[in-house]
Image (tube, rainbow, N blue to C red; front, side, top):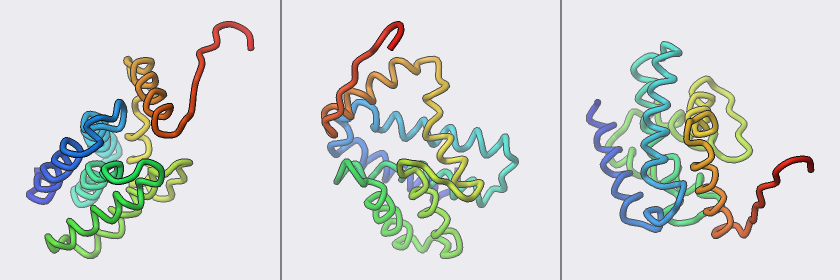
Amino acid sequence: MSKIINETRIYCETILSNSICSNYQFHDLQHTLEVYKNVLLIAEAESIIAEEKEILAISALFHDTGYSQIYKGHEEISMHIAEEFLVQRNYNNDYLPSVLKCISATRMPQQPESLLEKIICDADFAHLSAANYFQKISLLRKEWSYFLGMNFQMKIGKP
């Protein structure tokens, strides 16, 4: 793991563990670490070069940090947090726009343009094919109910 990825991971873990995010049922530290793991798995399968893997790793770690300040529209805050952190560490100016675009691509509805944006979007939605899908979706629905006022009812059988 590169120094910048390690520093990013520690910083994002601190944000997600010491803010309102620690009370979220779905968009918590565990979700972020799952997205991080999944971007690396997908990047490896796609034979992505090391520099782009770094972009993906950093983007995944920052993508939901904005939830620490606002629920709806958190992506803009996540981008601001990432940019501020990376600029302070003299992160490569050639890569910074790609990090921000990857974070932005996770905004719903997702409309990724580049391969890296597609990878982070797929990693963010990997729970849809997970063995614990029903558990994850139940947590997400509870979170949406609380923060967005959205309520869901399971319907069994014909509509």
